[in-house]
Image (cartoon, rainbow, N blue to C red):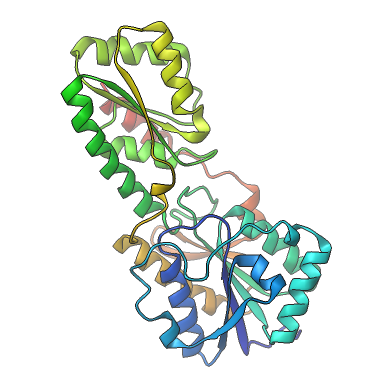
Length: 326
């Protein structure tokens, strides 16, 4: 595989789906064709690269997909790609299909696999961050995060109607694994009384303060947003119920509905910009990088940094949440 040959690129989506992935696929495909590069669509992520689930795309193949959630290429987590034998099969597929480089759309697991694959076979790979968790270092936002955030706020607004009517304390669990970006910012946007995030340890005393200074004082509704990596809503609700059995406590776990839905305008634009930038990076002979956005400017972030470093939670945003929760 020549270092500088770029006659055909492969594009795939991997890991959890995120709204805006289709917009990224569209942008990658059309930007490549605009630059006289053929496009091979790889279905079901790295598994499809191993099992040769591949179709050549033209510009019509990505028409009318920008507004759809999910991914038309499907996605799957592939254990076989974690093995040297699996990666060899994937490389053999690239050679037989005439694919010179890859654009992979996904999160940290996707980029971890891409980095190893690129090192082993000298394959040019550019990543596009597609994950609702917004947990990748080197980019202000990831594709899907804005849409998921708006979905959560819409759900919490509806939950508050019931919470207010019945004077209940609701614990609402949102996605985020080890990152609290969705929980913290949805709490601010929805006017929640507190956000429990993995970046900050939540003590029993803090929960007591919520009850004594918030719910108990007003005899009204309260909503606490809990990141799934922050202890879980069921556990938090159980702790409060054991201490304050007189209060009407409910738990709502939003689950996978956060992943679905038509992408927001912001995610469509972000995905489009990143898709075009991915092709430009390959043309510029960049490799093993993630396309990011910082202060509304496109940046190239080495896979090693995007994977290795934790994205830091802003203390100022946490402070805003605490001030507004009184």
